[in-house]
Length: 347
Image 1 (tube, rainbow, N blue to C red):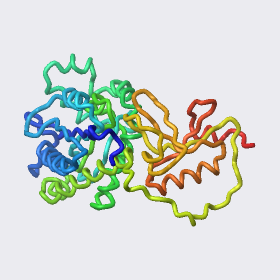
Image 2: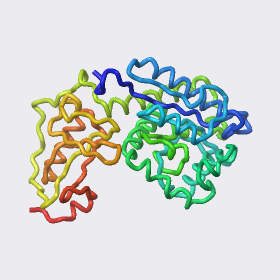
Image 3: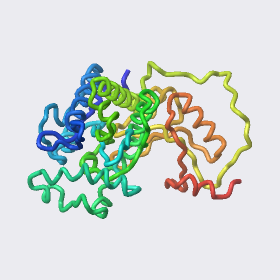
C-alpha cells in the first residue's frame, strides 16, 4: 500500500521548457528545444499516468508560451510533490552530455551561463520587472536570494536529480555532466522538490539528432519516468515490498567510538508529508525519529553517540533500500556538520 492516505495522489508537475514565441535553444541542424522538451514531457506524463496513485499536471501540452512565474504557480496551486522541468542545452563547441540542476548558488561561470540563458526568457514576458521584482539574469548578485525558499527541499531535489543522471548514465550510456546547482528562476518559483533537466546539446551534431529522434525521446522519457518512480518509492516506501536483513548477516566487530555530547543518526528520507514513525512506513526499520524543518519533515534511523554503531546502522538502512542515506550529527539538540562532530573528543 502506498504510504499516504488512500485518497491522496502523488502529484508530479511536468514542465516542458520554452514554447510558442520562445523556441529556446536551436541549432543549424534545425533542432528546437521547445519541440524536443514537449515531446519528452508528453511521453513521461503518459507513462506516469498509468499509475493510479500518481496525478500528472502539465505547465503546457502544446506549443504555447508560458511565463516562468506561471509555471511555478501551476505547481504550487496543484500542491505538487515534484516539479520536473525538461530542457536542452547548447554551446558554440561540440559539447555533449546530460546534466540535472537543483536550485543553488552557481559554483562556476559555466553553471551561471546555463542558468542565465534559461532565465533570459523573462524578457519575452509582459510586466517582467514587476513579476520578478527587479531580478536581472545578467547579474550574479541577483541569484543569491533565490536559494532560500528551496533550501528546505534541497536534499530531495538532489535525490531526484541523482536518479535522473544515474539512469541516463547507466542505462543509456550518456555522458554524465553531473548534478549541479544554479539559479534558475523557474525552480525558485516552486515550493516543492524541483529539478531542471538539460537532456543534451542540440548544437552537437550527433546528440542533437538523437534528441530530435523518436528513439532518443523515448529512451530519455523512460529514464525520467523511472527516476520519478524511484524517487517516489524512496520517499514513500511500499510495505508489500519490504526486504529483510538475513539473520545470518555478520556485522564486522569494531571497537566503539563514543563521542561525548554528540548524537549520530542516519537520515533516510525527507518529505513534505508527515508520516507516522512506524516501521511499516520505513521498510521495517525501527527506532525512527522525525524532525520538522520549515515545511519539510526529515526522517532519521537510530540514535547513538557511537560512531562505529551508526555506521553499522547506515549499512542496515542501505540493505533495506535506502541507498542514498547518510549520517548526520547533533550536539545539544542542534545539527552540526559530521566533520565538526568527528573532531570532538571520544570517550
